[in-house]
Amino acid sequence: MKKVVAIMMALVMVLCFAACSNDEAADTTSEQTDSEYVKEKGTLVVGITEFEPMDYKDDNGNWVGFDADMATAFAESLGVEVEFVVIDWDNKIMELDSESIDCVWNGMTLTDEVKESMETSNAYCNNAQVVVVPSEVAENYTTEESIMDLNFSAEAGSAGEAALQDLGCNVTSLQSQADALMEVSAGTSDACVIDLLMAGAMIGEGTSYENLTYTISLNSEEYGVGFRKGSDLAELLNQFFVDSYADGSMQEIAETYGVQESLIEQQ
Image 1 (cartoon, rainbow, N blue to C red):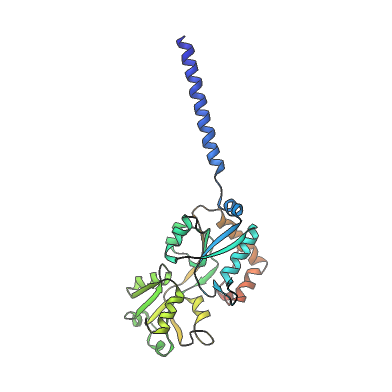
Image 2: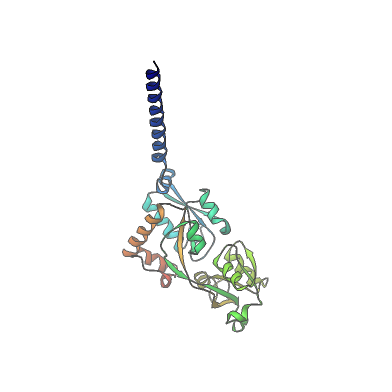
């Protein structure tokens, strides 16, 4: 009798172990990749800020720009629609992790923090952080030493803000680079630091800020796209970059927005 009970107990334990193993296997196989998740919901949600020439609205209220057009084309390659969501740049990692957005695609500098916190694409554009001042005083601010006493504005969480903090400059953090430009134009800040690509598109002759110019660069950097850590979308985007560079469509979009000189070869 004792042997029978022991055998029955052993069988029960084996069955329980098998059931648990099957549950664990089911849980593992049921996990979606990011690309499956995006395709299932039918949209690629892209986190951006207003940043000409990368992401900005045209006269019809549509998001355009080099990054916006490339994001739209990538979404099409996945068979989904693109949706642009304006985010607080300082909270971009949190927005990704909470699945409020699927990627950050907005002239994002590939800093150590970004690469540690996100799954990032290969670099696709070169850039720098530049000091912007009123044109009439530009000749006074051509070295790092000469700018140390200025009151700066910069986008919160941006590479420009970080560069100023590293120098020990006085900086007011704002929501966007566009806001930083407005501060300098209005005389509320002495200067600001923004991306070189943005400076080329938004200040100087023929722009809304003809009275502003940029002087020195504080660094050199590269742009990339960020996804959730471990996302398979980063590798899919890398291949999309290679393909679109090879067929010339990436260069064509870059020329539309005047960023072709900053483009990095994809291979």
